[in-house]
Image (cartoon, rainbow, N blue to C red; front, side, top):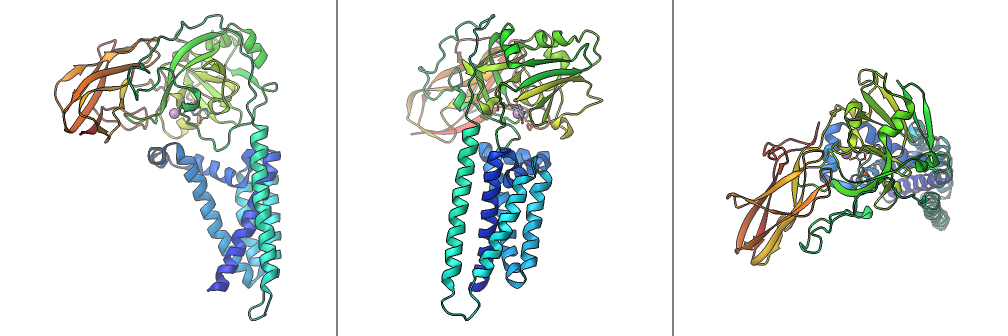
Length: 491
Ligand SMILES: Nc1nc2c(c(=O)[nH]1)N[C@H]1C(S)=C(S)[C@@H](COP(=O)(O)O)O[C@H]1N2
Ligand SMILES: [Mo]
């Protein structure tokens, strides 16, 4: 039994050394080619939509950590088996390890890290198998302990160095932003200080939700970056970052929303965006004669997002943004440039790390989520959220406030927010200031809380008189609906 454990441990350790070596090499070449990351990314792309939805709902922003953890756990299990096999016959163990390495090599953008991982893994396996004492032989244990210690140290050093090099190479390269030719008015003072626990009227960039299919953030050199408009246009045009910075910039307050946001969920944020109007860019390419109905955006790695052309060019403030909350975009949010279209969910508009916009038709080309059966034209549904009190929290009896945010983007606007306590009548909440229909609105309702358990619900009524529906819908395929109802205890 003990011997088996040592054999399996040898396989696991050798694999870890190999993976760490691969990670180090990838940090020097292409971080996304690190063996575990490459397999993890492919798993994300292959995960069926319902499972993906489930993972996002269950694990939230940790969904990726869990995914990478599962991939690693699976690999290490097989690595243990490789160790057991190697003890019988070295070639079998080495063979299994090479198969393990072959998988990332097949899916990674760059071969080298996987090959290095394989070579180092097999080399370590060979060394440790040799150093392992023969059964019954006395005093042979030191050799294997020394070898194992040396390899474990090497794995930690290589893994750590890889991480450090990647973060060094990918440190944010901030760009200086010129002032907007068409600035937004100052954001009114929201209810942030008056209603403790309410979402800030403007979401700080560090707290802004992040949703994308990536495990590592892309490395984009702003001096090399370009944005090309091609497809069914009069002329193909390419812009550098300096070209964009030299064009008239607009500044707008826009609330971005993810289709995966459940009723009451956290996948939305409100920011001030600075960018070039989408129509200014499209005009340079000439789209008057186009028969395209979609803009197929491509990011630096070939991920695609489609946007209905008619919606993006109907006069709303659609833009290619280069600034967010007064600074250049962060790497998480699309540095150096991304699309922002008010009123459309992010998955059909907000392409981050954008490099290409192809004017084409839905009949001819399908984007990433379209292939996965999500809707193509997906306006953001009107909704609202209770920020305070928190679900299942205990509130002190007496005078308190219920507060949160509500949204009804693009030309609708939040006209009213209504709160219902314990299934009673809908009461009208007070609204915070407006920063336009494309932006969310804070709201609050003073409440005298009586001891006991209470249920609180909220709904929005938009400027067209439409009331947020109580009919429940899942995020797939075109956004969730329903009314958030929470339970709180008053003591
Ligand atoms: N390149 C790229 N852009 C992307 C995505 C992606 O996976 N890859 N996800 C989209 C989705 S689903 C949303 S909701 C928004 C989220 O933007 P944020 O992460 O800046 O909040 O980005 C969109 N842009
Ligand atoms: Mo999204």
